[in-house]
Length: 249
Image 1 (cartoon, rainbow, N blue to C red):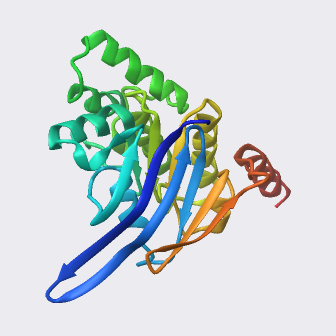
Image 2 (cartoon, rainbow, N blue to C red; image 1 turned 60 degrees about the vertical axis):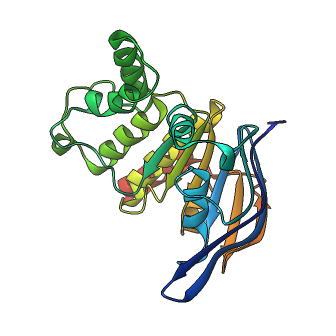
């Protein structure tokens, strides 16, 4: 955790639409180190989605410097940015974005088909291992419509980690899930973090943010609070408590 994975210096993002000027981010300075589990919070319009787009190299800042693993993102060509996203980052969204007529295993293999050329056996091995990591080793041949919402999100997480990225960017992945399934998914993210993966997670729910190690709060395009969590909530413990309360009921 000594070397910064991401550095933002004086980052600003301005949108101009029909004469309306919107400052989505205002002079943001931020450092994220390897192995952190950072949760980003804020109301709609606070700048958190804009920040995630910049971190994911899906958008460019209007001002400032954005460094990813020591590389200045603004100096990279579109092909270099695409390669950086494919090798360096894994994305998980609120909608699962799975191909409906493709098995779980084939969905997870897909990103590796667009990256550096790998033998088919290596792609199959990595996809299988990723699904086993998220607890779906027995669901490799299942199609999305044969899986629950939580299982589909696990496939999406497996797809994100199959390329063995340094960074996971998660945008409200539990937003449409019930309490039990949300806790199960947070357990997966905590397990990945325990293995050394860096996680950046957008949420509007304080109880979800409590599973991280650091919470960034945005308002009107500004970072208004940067708080380390002394004792993170434990998803496995909360799942056990939920099961106990359900049995008692």
